[in-house]
Image (spheres, rainbow, N blue to C red):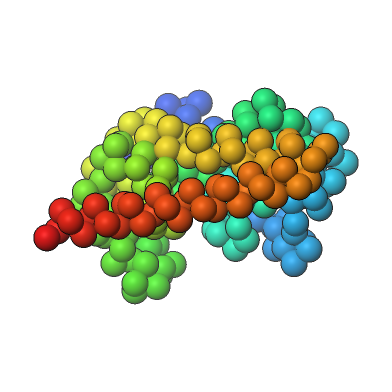
Length: 226
């Protein structure tokens, strides 16, 4: 399913500037992850974010945006670290902004360059999955795919980009879908500052909930196909 021809050309000047800034942030975040990826743990990321002072929030947004665009390390590291470094309120805000940045970059890469990039970048299996997802993409589909365990985050972003789905409905569905998980992970990071054992319990609960929801979703999908 083909996207609209050169949709970036129709963006306002301000939107183009924001898109370029977002891409630069993702590139910088990606370079940092490439350099220090082997040592990345939530507490290590927290220490780096705090050491950057007023630049810490921007670094959190850039790093998370990078791993959600090119998933070389788990995004949960940065989501937990956001709460650990900035607390549950500001940590949630900065982490949601980083998530939105990653969602936007993946969408616009696919919307602008489409199959030319995806066929070179993705494996045959991932490319086929993107095409299947694109065929049924709505903002509700995005919301459910973000909420339930299933296709990788980046593949959903790319599939939305090559589908006819408009940007703002996509972004709203994405933000609404990931918000509950981010809230829980940021809360775990915030609690880790005073009670690490409780934080571990929250993370274990998140994993169990994700497994249960994933099984329920697969069961319902199988029933509908039958």
